[in-house]
Length: 146
Image (tube, rainbow, N blue to C red; front, side, top):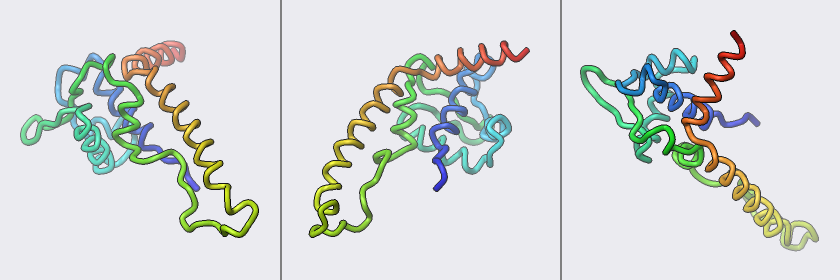
């Protein structure tokens, strides 16, 4: 089972286009893809999801590209998460467990409570971090490498 990287890719893309040298212009998906090292088609799909949630604006035609729809300080990682990760973090059984089993009859309700608490904690943490925070910390980490 592999981890889903949509949140990471979307956050990377938003952080790039929030950078001062890109912020005032529309940035192409090819430019974003060069930083992320991902296929531009995959990024366009993610960026379209972000557009539907009013996190980016798109310009088509000449000078096509993507631009933040809000200030980086106004976009939280929770906003990004909700745009690209529909549904809950965890899923329940695809088929109902055996209701005559000591465990199968009740495990669903127990796990639903556990998963709801985890989801709530995740969302509280994501709500505390903005794209501006990620950009600032990325620049600081880059400076520390030099």
